[in-house]
Length: 81
Image (cartoon, rainbow, N blue to C red):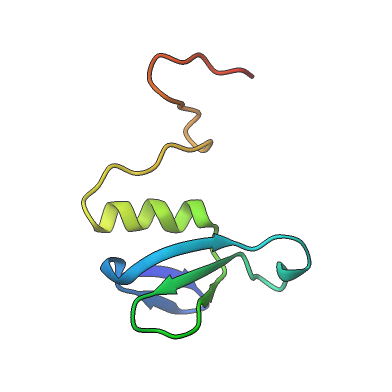
């Protein structure tokens, strides 16, 4: 189970897409749309796409996606900043 915020949880193996909200769609804690198999409409999450993706990877026993949080990049590539 992966937390989405607002007291909502989903099964990690049922999530098939994450869509970050931008511009006027974002606000009042709305951060990401989570598409779940078997649910007609996307679920609004108050957590970021990156945070949910890390939790999904961990729950599924996979390598978490690389991101800005830990400052790492692709192997063999120097950071630009």
